[in-house]
Image 1 (cartoon, rainbow, N blue to C red):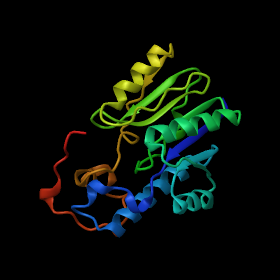
Image 2 (image 1 turned 135 degrees about the vertical axis):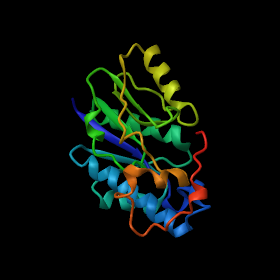
Image 3 (image 1 turned 120 degrees about the vertical axis):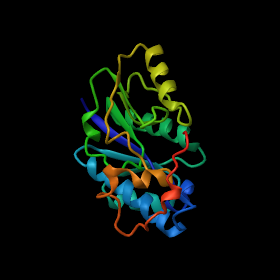
Image 4 (image 1 turned 45 degrees about the vertical axis):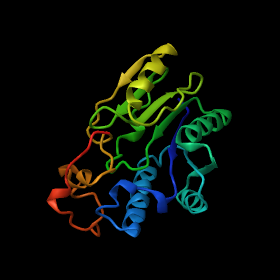
Length: 206
């Protein structure tokens, strides 16, 4: 397979808003950038593309060896769909789409399967942290609450075999204060992150 990786990255200064109760704006910016750098590093053996609408992110992506695809005013789903079309036009036949906030992305490039749609849900099986599919049968992005089920249904309607990958590392993301306390993340999160009071560790449904 000729596989590419696509990562949507929002402006670092606007990222991780749900961590505002426990992290400062600069800490949220630094955390978002650190996590995104980890995702790009984990996929460095494949061509990488970043969809963005921020000049700083574009410069950052190119500095890290990725191709930046400008997708202004499209929203997350529109930006991913536009990026998928651009990658297909370049001759790739399979794509891995990954969120940029995965703290343990080391197994990212291993999820692609020929002629198969593969989905990695988050820990509560609501969102879609990673998905992979053939570009001749693309799956329209449907991120937001309940996206995992929507993506699976779309793949089945398209007639694609569906693989749900229960990957405990790729299922982890960093959205709320409770995520910062996950035992698997204690050694991989940046050491400059502040200690969060225990009473913040309530993980809402997502």
